[in-house]
Length: 523
Image 1 (cartoon, rainbow, N blue to C red):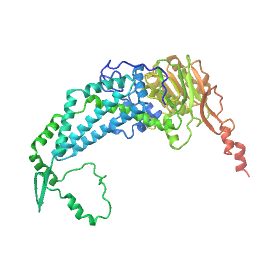
Image 2: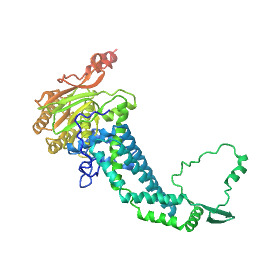
Image 3: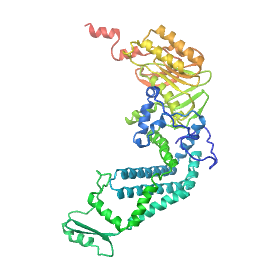
């Protein structure tokens, strides 16, 4: 169950025409999503790929690559998500989506058919499916009790649209054509290679007699036939010729079919088609997080503001959690907080202890919050960054002939040049290729610059001295099992850096100390 951490304000229905379930104020121009490097560093590209898998026809990836820039817009999405917690409302949205998928399937089938009348008939079926879906959603939303301005505005739009003359004409015409086609009765007379088509005028139906005659040869009960290998039931040339003769026998019915096909090419309302795509943004993410929630992990709607005072409880790395959950392994949750003048987490501790995972988690939380989505945790107070910058360790690039230290300096300089006081900066294992003294000096200057600039920062480092650099820095340490220091707990807690790397513990465990090696080498 998602628990919003701030009160939800409900707008009066009908105050604003509906145009989008994602945006309170839709952008004037299409959003141009970015492909920033931080997406890979924070494993957000993996999360987005997993979330959108199976929903490729909706083209959701650009929506997940377009963070919001307004707290007001984030609240708009939070309210929609709160409505979608209602099982009945979620079920009606799912039913709508299935109906629209069925409509698109018929349209695709119609476009692939060669024979005109068959193409037109399948097109009418698609239109009738769409009309039934609109009417059903309108009825169900009238009976439902949504609270979000987005779904309230959608309900008002549906009422106006479903009551419009254009929609009534579409539905009446579609049902009239399909009724006319379903009532056609004709006879086929086959003699040799000659097929004669005529009107039905009460002739005897010999189907029962034929079936009775061949009953003695039946070896098993007849069932429904389904050819799963064919998605398009294409007529052959004989069937097409028969259909042409039937059309000549019933010109009014087929004239209505032709007229519908010509008059209603763009029969679907653009606003409803946009809603059908945009609502999948929410459903895809909720479906992605549902297995984790069922496993006992928590998600919440964060309080997002301009304040850089942060507080998050029971959070975790979403990408890692899905990997662990698939292997039925436990997911370790962490807490963190910042209060002014604190702005920089300095994360230290033993290798493989969860430091990088913690840094990724902070970045994921802020990005998911900027999309207006629930975030991992029981409680979350986050800020809305104007941009996220990351510096994760890279291997040496032989093409540019720069050493690793120079590459680190060039990349960090670019981050400092572009970052603003409203940015989020994540530095992971900087200056590992230089001496300790140089790492202290360079790291201190960089964190000093970030302190003066004012963005929120996470710095994962082996240099414990940076953890107490100034009042802006907060020391976070990845911990080990007190009884067995070899075991990592993957808990990252707020405490002074202890300078313990536990290298000797590991060396003793694997008999790699100086004395142990001498005993093994020297007889």
